[in-house]
Length: 277
Image (cartoon, rainbow, N blue to C red; front, side):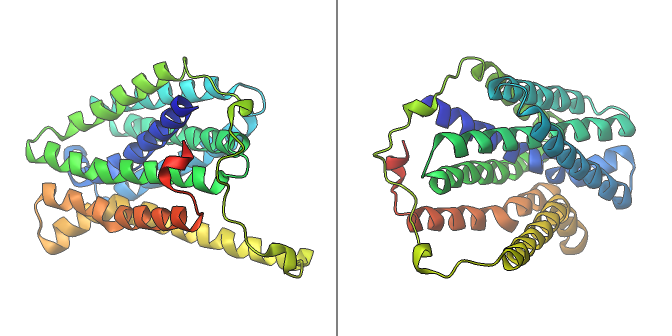
Protein backbone atom coordinates (compact mmCIF):
# COMPACT_ATOMS: atom_id res chain seq x y z
CA UNK A 1 0.00 0.00 0.00
CA UNK A 2 2.93 2.33 0.62
CA UNK A 3 4.01 1.94 -3.03
CA UNK A 4 0.47 2.66 -4.18
CA UNK A 5 0.34 5.82 -2.09
CA UNK A 6 3.72 7.15 -3.21
CA UNK A 7 2.98 6.37 -6.88
CA UNK A 8 -0.36 8.18 -6.64
CA UNK A 9 1.22 11.24 -5.02
CA UNK A 10 3.92 11.19 -7.72
CA UNK A 11 1.22 11.38 -10.37
CA UNK A 12 -0.33 14.39 -8.65
CA UNK A 13 3.13 15.94 -8.44
CA UNK A 14 3.39 15.45 -12.21
CA UNK A 15 0.05 17.15 -12.82
CA UNK A 16 1.24 20.05 -10.65
CA UNK A 17 4.32 20.39 -12.84
CA UNK A 18 2.38 20.32 -16.09
CA UNK A 19 -0.32 22.69 -14.82
CA UNK A 20 2.21 25.52 -14.41
CA UNK A 21 4.69 24.57 -17.16
CA UNK A 22 3.21 26.84 -19.86
CA UNK A 23 2.62 29.78 -17.54
CA UNK A 24 6.18 29.61 -16.23
CA UNK A 25 7.62 30.24 -19.71
CA UNK A 26 4.72 32.20 -21.21
CA UNK A 27 6.73 35.36 -22.11
CA UNK A 28 9.46 33.34 -23.83
CA UNK A 29 6.88 31.19 -25.56
CA UNK A 30 4.93 34.12 -26.99
CA UNK A 31 8.14 35.85 -27.99
CA UNK A 32 9.29 32.76 -29.89
CA UNK A 33 6.00 32.50 -31.79
CA UNK A 34 5.71 36.30 -32.21
CA UNK A 35 2.25 36.07 -30.66
CA UNK A 36 0.30 38.54 -28.54
CA UNK A 37 -1.10 37.94 -25.08
CA UNK A 38 -4.51 37.61 -26.68
CA UNK A 39 -3.21 34.49 -28.39
CA UNK A 40 -1.75 33.42 -25.06
CA UNK A 41 -5.20 33.75 -23.52
CA UNK A 42 -6.59 31.49 -26.22
CA UNK A 43 -3.89 28.96 -25.42
CA UNK A 44 -4.92 28.90 -21.76
CA UNK A 45 -8.56 28.57 -22.83
CA UNK A 46 -7.66 25.56 -24.98
CA UNK A 47 -5.94 24.01 -21.98
CA UNK A 48 -9.03 24.59 -19.84
CA UNK A 49 -11.23 22.95 -22.47
CA UNK A 50 -8.82 20.02 -22.58
CA UNK A 51 -9.12 19.62 -18.83
CA UNK A 52 -12.92 19.70 -19.05
CA UNK A 53 -12.86 17.15 -21.87
CA UNK A 54 -10.54 14.96 -19.82
CA UNK A 55 -12.90 15.03 -16.85
CA UNK A 56 -15.92 14.08 -18.96
CA UNK A 57 -14.05 11.40 -20.94
CA UNK A 58 -12.47 9.82 -17.86
CA UNK A 59 -15.79 9.74 -16.03
CA UNK A 60 -17.08 7.62 -18.92
CA UNK A 61 -13.99 5.39 -19.27
CA UNK A 62 -13.54 4.88 -15.53
CA UNK A 63 -16.43 2.41 -15.51
CA UNK A 64 -15.10 0.42 -18.46
CA UNK A 65 -11.33 0.15 -17.91
CA UNK A 66 -9.11 -0.73 -14.99
CA UNK A 67 -7.64 2.34 -13.25
CA UNK A 68 -4.08 1.15 -13.87
CA UNK A 69 -4.70 1.12 -17.61
CA UNK A 70 -6.14 4.63 -17.57
CA UNK A 71 -3.29 5.98 -15.44
CA UNK A 72 -0.62 4.42 -17.65
CA UNK A 73 -2.24 5.74 -20.83
CA UNK A 74 -2.75 9.19 -19.29
CA UNK A 75 0.90 9.41 -18.24
CA UNK A 76 1.98 8.34 -21.74
CA UNK A 77 -0.35 10.97 -23.23
CA UNK A 78 1.31 13.66 -21.11
CA UNK A 79 4.76 12.34 -22.07
CA UNK A 80 3.90 12.44 -25.76
CA UNK A 81 2.52 15.97 -25.52
CA UNK A 82 5.48 17.26 -23.50
CA UNK A 83 8.09 15.66 -25.78
CA UNK A 84 6.30 17.13 -28.81
CA UNK A 85 6.05 20.58 -27.22
CA UNK A 86 9.80 20.43 -26.68
CA UNK A 87 10.47 20.81 -30.43
CA UNK A 88 8.22 23.93 -30.52
CA UNK A 89 6.01 22.89 -33.46
CA UNK A 90 3.76 25.32 -35.39
CA UNK A 91 1.49 27.15 -32.99
CA UNK A 92 -1.81 25.45 -34.01
CA UNK A 93 -0.16 22.08 -33.36
CA UNK A 94 1.27 23.44 -30.11
CA UNK A 95 -2.27 24.30 -28.97
CA UNK A 96 -3.49 20.83 -29.90
CA UNK A 97 -0.67 19.26 -27.89
CA UNK A 98 -1.47 21.45 -24.90
CA UNK A 99 -5.08 20.31 -25.20
CA UNK A 100 -3.97 16.65 -25.05
CA UNK A 101 -1.67 17.42 -22.12
CA UNK A 102 -4.62 18.85 -20.19
CA UNK A 103 -6.75 15.82 -21.03
CA UNK A 104 -4.07 13.56 -19.54
CA UNK A 105 -3.75 15.69 -16.41
CA UNK A 106 -7.50 15.70 -15.83
CA UNK A 107 -7.67 11.95 -16.34
CA UNK A 108 -4.97 11.35 -13.72
CA UNK A 109 -6.74 13.60 -11.23
CA UNK A 110 -10.09 11.87 -11.64
CA UNK A 111 -8.78 8.29 -11.55
CA UNK A 112 -6.42 8.74 -8.59
CA UNK A 113 -9.02 10.63 -6.55
CA UNK A 114 -11.59 7.91 -7.24
CA UNK A 115 -9.17 5.18 -6.14
CA UNK A 116 -8.31 7.03 -2.94
CA UNK A 117 -11.97 7.47 -2.05
CA UNK A 118 -12.56 3.74 -2.57
CA UNK A 119 -9.42 2.51 -0.83
CA UNK A 120 -9.02 4.79 2.20
CA UNK A 121 -12.44 4.25 3.71
CA UNK A 122 -13.04 6.67 6.58
CA UNK A 123 -9.74 8.46 5.85
CA UNK A 124 -10.58 10.16 2.55
CA UNK A 125 -9.97 13.67 3.88
CA UNK A 126 -6.46 12.88 5.10
CA UNK A 127 -5.62 10.89 1.96
CA UNK A 128 -6.90 13.57 -0.41
CA UNK A 129 -4.92 16.18 1.51
CA UNK A 130 -1.72 14.35 0.65
CA UNK A 131 -2.67 14.33 -3.01
CA UNK A 132 -3.32 18.07 -2.98
CA UNK A 133 -0.06 18.75 -1.19
CA UNK A 134 1.73 16.71 -3.86
CA UNK A 135 0.06 18.79 -6.55
CA UNK A 136 1.07 21.97 -4.75
CA UNK A 137 4.68 20.83 -4.49
CA UNK A 138 4.72 20.17 -8.23
CA UNK A 139 3.21 23.55 -9.02
CA UNK A 140 5.71 25.22 -6.68
CA UNK A 141 8.69 23.34 -8.10
CA UNK A 142 8.00 24.09 -11.76
CA UNK A 143 8.54 27.90 -11.57
CA UNK A 144 11.83 27.34 -9.73
CA UNK A 145 12.99 25.00 -12.47
CA UNK A 146 11.74 27.40 -15.13
CA UNK A 147 13.70 30.24 -13.57
CA UNK A 148 16.91 28.20 -13.81
CA UNK A 149 16.25 27.12 -17.39
CA UNK A 150 15.31 30.65 -18.50
CA UNK A 151 18.43 32.11 -16.89
CA UNK A 152 20.55 29.69 -18.95
CA UNK A 153 18.50 30.32 -22.11
CA UNK A 154 17.42 26.69 -22.39
CA UNK A 155 13.79 27.18 -21.38
CA UNK A 156 12.39 24.83 -24.03
CA UNK A 157 14.18 21.88 -22.36
CA UNK A 158 12.01 22.41 -19.30
CA UNK A 159 9.50 20.09 -20.94
CA UNK A 160 12.04 17.25 -20.92
CA UNK A 161 11.66 16.95 -17.15
CA UNK A 162 7.91 16.47 -17.23
CA UNK A 163 8.11 14.16 -20.24
CA UNK A 164 10.71 11.86 -18.66
CA UNK A 165 8.86 11.82 -15.33
CA UNK A 166 5.63 10.92 -17.13
CA UNK A 167 7.33 8.02 -18.92
CA UNK A 168 8.81 6.72 -15.66
CA UNK A 169 5.45 6.88 -13.89
CA UNK A 170 3.75 5.13 -16.81
CA UNK A 171 6.23 2.28 -16.35
CA UNK A 172 5.81 2.29 -12.58
CA UNK A 173 2.04 2.02 -12.81
CA UNK A 174 2.30 -1.15 -14.86
CA UNK A 175 3.82 -2.74 -11.74
CA UNK A 176 1.77 -1.17 -8.96
CA UNK A 177 -0.75 -3.40 -7.21
CA UNK A 178 -3.31 -2.47 -4.60
CA UNK A 179 -6.36 -3.91 -2.96
CA UNK A 180 -9.13 -2.49 -0.84
CA UNK A 181 -8.65 -5.37 1.58
CA UNK A 182 -5.08 -4.20 2.29
CA UNK A 183 -6.31 -1.14 4.19
CA UNK A 184 -5.78 -1.26 7.93
CA UNK A 185 -9.10 -0.14 9.42
CA UNK A 186 -7.41 0.40 12.79
CA UNK A 187 -5.64 3.48 11.45
CA UNK A 188 -6.92 6.86 12.72
CA UNK A 189 -9.98 8.05 10.82
CA UNK A 190 -10.96 11.52 9.67
CA UNK A 191 -12.19 13.88 12.35
CA UNK A 192 -15.96 13.66 12.71
CA UNK A 193 -18.30 16.48 13.51
CA UNK A 194 -21.51 16.58 15.48
CA UNK A 195 -23.72 16.05 12.45
CA UNK A 196 -25.90 13.56 14.31
CA UNK A 197 -27.21 16.28 16.60
CA UNK A 198 -27.89 18.76 13.80
CA UNK A 199 -31.20 19.22 12.06
CA UNK A 200 -31.09 17.60 8.58
CA UNK A 201 -31.19 20.02 5.66
CA UNK A 202 -34.09 20.05 3.24
CA UNK A 203 -33.57 18.98 -0.36
CA UNK A 204 -33.95 22.57 -1.59
CA UNK A 205 -31.40 23.90 0.89
CA UNK A 206 -28.95 21.12 -0.03
CA UNK A 207 -29.13 22.18 -3.68
CA UNK A 208 -28.56 25.80 -2.68
CA UNK A 209 -25.47 24.85 -0.63
CA UNK A 210 -24.19 22.60 -3.44
CA UNK A 211 -24.67 25.38 -6.01
CA UNK A 212 -22.86 27.83 -3.76
CA UNK A 213 -19.85 25.54 -3.40
CA UNK A 214 -19.92 24.87 -7.14
CA UNK A 215 -19.76 28.62 -7.78
CA UNK A 216 -16.81 28.99 -5.41
CA UNK A 217 -14.90 26.19 -7.15
CA UNK A 218 -15.76 27.69 -10.55
CA UNK A 219 -14.45 31.13 -9.60
CA UNK A 220 -11.42 29.81 -7.72
CA UNK A 221 -10.37 27.45 -10.49
CA UNK A 222 -10.81 30.06 -13.20
CA UNK A 223 -9.01 32.86 -11.37
CA UNK A 224 -6.13 30.69 -10.17
CA UNK A 225 -5.62 29.07 -13.54
CA UNK A 226 -5.64 32.36 -15.42
CA UNK A 227 -3.52 34.38 -13.01
CA UNK A 228 -0.94 31.63 -12.55
CA UNK A 229 -0.31 31.43 -16.27
CA UNK A 230 0.06 35.19 -16.72
CA UNK A 231 1.74 36.14 -13.44
CA UNK A 232 5.26 36.04 -14.89
CA UNK A 233 4.16 38.26 -17.79
CA UNK A 234 2.66 40.78 -15.36
CA UNK A 235 5.88 40.93 -13.37
CA UNK A 236 7.95 41.44 -16.52
CA UNK A 237 5.77 44.06 -18.21
CA UNK A 238 4.62 46.09 -15.21
CA UNK A 239 7.38 45.58 -12.62
CA UNK A 240 10.28 45.34 -15.09
CA UNK A 241 11.58 42.10 -13.60
CA UNK A 242 13.93 39.76 -15.44
CA UNK A 243 12.30 36.70 -16.96
CA UNK A 244 13.96 34.23 -14.58
CA UNK A 245 12.81 36.26 -11.55
CA UNK A 246 9.32 36.77 -12.94
CA UNK A 247 8.90 33.03 -13.42
CA UNK A 248 9.31 32.44 -9.68
CA UNK A 249 6.27 34.67 -9.05
CA UNK A 250 4.04 31.93 -10.46
CA UNK A 251 4.96 29.66 -7.56
CA UNK A 252 4.94 32.36 -4.91
CA UNK A 253 1.49 33.53 -5.98
CA UNK A 254 -0.51 30.64 -4.59
CA UNK A 255 1.20 27.37 -3.91
CA UNK A 256 2.81 28.05 -0.48
CA UNK A 257 -0.61 29.09 0.78
CA UNK A 258 -2.06 25.88 -0.64
CA UNK A 259 0.52 23.83 1.24
CA UNK A 260 -0.18 25.71 4.47
CA UNK A 261 -3.93 25.22 4.15
CA UNK A 262 -3.51 21.52 3.45
CA UNK A 263 -1.24 21.05 6.47
CA UNK A 264 -3.79 22.83 8.65
CA UNK A 265 -6.40 20.49 7.30
CA UNK A 266 -4.25 17.49 8.17
CA UNK A 267 -3.92 18.80 11.71
CA UNK A 268 -7.68 19.29 12.03
CA UNK A 269 -8.21 15.71 10.83
CA UNK A 270 -6.44 14.55 13.96
CA UNK A 271 -3.94 12.27 12.24
CA UNK A 272 -0.16 12.76 12.21
CA UNK A 273 1.66 12.32 8.94
CA UNK A 274 3.24 9.03 9.90
CA UNK A 275 -0.12 7.44 10.60
CA UNK A 276 -1.20 7.89 7.01
CA UNK A 277 1.11 5.08 5.96
